[in-house]
Image (tube, rainbow, N blue to C red):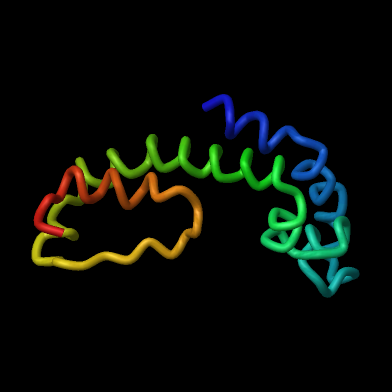
Length: 105
């Protein structure tokens, strides 16, 4: 949970919130993150390894909380699947948890 809190309370992630009202009012055409940082989140992460590492740790933390709940309440969704693709480009936490719980995948 610490990684999520550190990410969301970082100046990088807090700064876009200051432009939210302008976005809602239609005064900003681009996503607020791009307006504030001059590039999208993915480009920013590629250029800032420390932020990218924290982002991936936070997403893995989120996956460790969410995926078990999804598996517990919706395991039938995964029955009959033999292949699954992880397109998140993080560290594979969500996919690993799914495959451990659903060894037929």
